[in-house]
Length: 106
Length: 120
Image 1: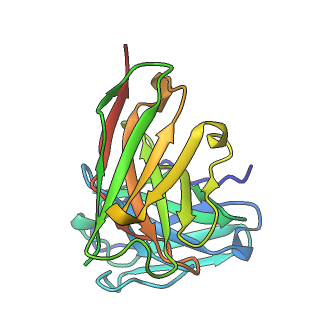
Image 2: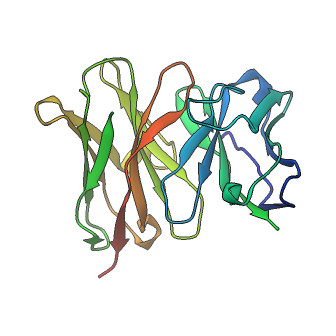
Image 3: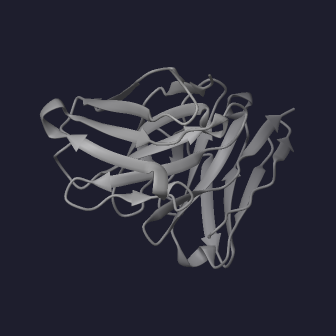
C-alpha cells in the first residue's frame, strides 16, 4: 500500500521559514494537499492541488511537489502557525495521509 | 455555508458495530460532485482515512478497513452514515466526516468530530 512519510517534528523560530516534507514513491506524479490541525480543532486545508492556497489562507503558506517529495513552506512563521501538519495524496481512488508533523514555533 | 455534524453513540462494546451519521446543513448532499468522507484520529495520533463516496458513484474504502466498513447515504435527511463492524479497542478514535472537492482539492469542510470509545 502507498505510504507518505513526514518528519515527526519541526522547530522554527518566529519570523523564520519552516519547511515540512512529505515523501512517497513518485509523489510528484500525484496531487498533494496539506492540512493544519491546531490542538482540539478539526483539520483545515491550507494547500490544495500541490500548491494552491484556498481562500482565507495566508500568503506565507506555499508548497511544491516534485519527484518523491512534497514540501510545505511557511515563510515568516508566526506563533499562531504552531500546529500539526498533515500531507495527503490520492492513490487511485483511495486517500492517503502522512503521519503528521508537529510544528513548534520557539 | 456548508456545515457537517457527526452523531452517534460514544461507547460501543467490542465485537459490535459502530454506527455514525453525518448531517449536512447549508447545502445539499446531492448537489455537485463532492466526495463525502469519513476520517478518524485516535487520541494523540494521526489522521486515518476510512472511506468516501460521490453521490453519483460507488464508495471507496481504506483497504485496511474495507472488509468492515459500509458507507451509505440518506438523501431525504441530507445525511450519510458510517458502519464499522466487529470493532475492537483499536477502533477507539475521534471520528470526523468531511467534504472533499473534486479534482484533488482536498477536504475543505470538516465536522467537529465525535469520540467513539470501544470498551466493555
